[in-house]
Image (cartoon, helix red, strand yellow):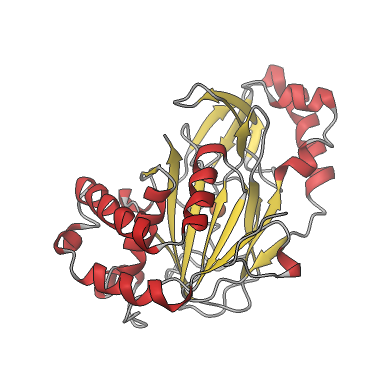
Length: 331
Ligand SMILES: [Fe+2]
């Protein structure tokens, strides 16, 4: 992607990604700011407090972040482009607990990463909302949980095929932000641009995908949810732009099925086309180091579908691996 920016890191392996390296200045200054924020102890308990912190941190970041980075984030928040931003050199906590269950570790850590995530969402002019996940928390912890290792969820250790996040929910997050606290170098977050393959779908398949005839289910084994949707749907944003949204799984069987018997055959044709085109795909991935984040468009665009599907490559071996995640919604 052609983009000129003095903070951009040239990495041939990441052509689809806009990369910024923020350096040490923001780290030190941001940590000091977080320390002086009295409302922080209620961050996880109370949504209003979290929104207040989002404003405070967003305004601080408006001073600290280079303006070209802010412009790119704002543009992404408004139009969905670029599809992925990769940020390096972000502040991490002074202390990242290693022992205990994930909730104990969350409580024991300072809240630098959480504040930064909320601040970045503010720059993007997005809302951060819970989406029936992780007990209604607005910042999710993606880390292996004892006893849930084998589930296809944020608590498991298994690799995860490409998908749009929360495809089974009425409100699909517009962006997903992932922030790494502890890396597992054997595991990477994979991504695959949607526009490239969606155009290769036959016309009749695309027409079938626009019909509200698919039952979409969350992964089995953990807090199961389902709903009936089109795989390609249209909605209006606040500025009355037409947003085209994809809901899809690289391996659709077990996740997508016909909403009724009458549409069974048509839905099967779509599933077969998805398998033919997407199953062989081996996407690129980024193994996020501590203090790195990616923000990606979760499968929508203005007037045409855009963004990426994402997944996880490799099985988690480092049980301390810890990513934090936020779902962002365009206003
Ligand atoms: Fe996901």
